[in-house]
Length: 411
Image (cartoon, rainbow, N blue to C red; front, side, top):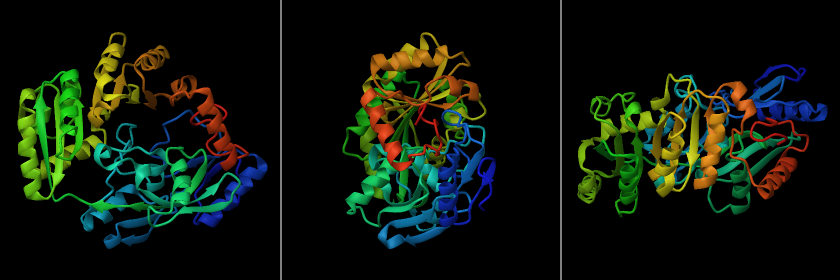
């Protein structure tokens, strides 16, 4: 498809066709919106373009060797399809990618594998297994000149290419269009246990999660959900109004998981652990955390805040003095999903002001287009980092046509 890129939706059938489209846009200085399957279209500053280039038709698993723990997929391949294939072989994407679809008013399982790595949205297991970028082995893509490139390979030893791939992870399609990703996969745990504590304050919950992560029991997930949000879960023990819930997950082979869970419950005695989820209930609960069902059906602004865990509760408490907020703490408190009241831009100003005091980074995940156009959606960068980002953008996309301004004005 080589039509006029000033208007319209383009979903090329091959990476060569995609490269031609981008080269045509670069020659004409025509801005384009880079998109996978569109599940995260509502995140970021609105992109002012008349043309969309989507990778949704570049969809196929091109390599999967379970014994080598490696998988390659074209960028438009559904994340759900990749996860189903891995599950058939008792394997997983260990970074537990977050599904923003339900929180953004869309369906579940609509994300593409390219969009997953482009946004680096890693889930609860990040505390044990690392982020999405840590699992990328190689990438193929097209830069802003329309030139195809390859970086990395099938093993972690290819350091030079791997570093280039890491630069693309978290760039939200502003540097290049990824067309194929090769990733490391890992065995899925045989058994999962989740310890539940009810009614803890945010401060006590962060303490309990931190204590758990400091033990030798290889905790693979910790989350604290404030009381107003627990009713969104399907598990009756969590949803029936017992106040906030603090959940701590251990995964391993059966005997080890049971031993470690019992020992951890002893360590957590001061926090009164009163329930435990077995493997089936645990997987359902953490699947709902991954899909952010706590924020489904709401139009309230939703922020993703990273901070020092020990400061998280006080940070949220400070914001709560002026805004009506609901919070979920993940990563032992290092990640906070914060839903705020519908406000003017003053709410964003308050959050940025508080972050300046406590330290951290915040991204506005859900808001009306007018709000996203008028506030800092992504964390403002210091002058030196902004200069570095501008140079990186110029190297990959000198004409500035790929998702212009989605993350920062002029970049």
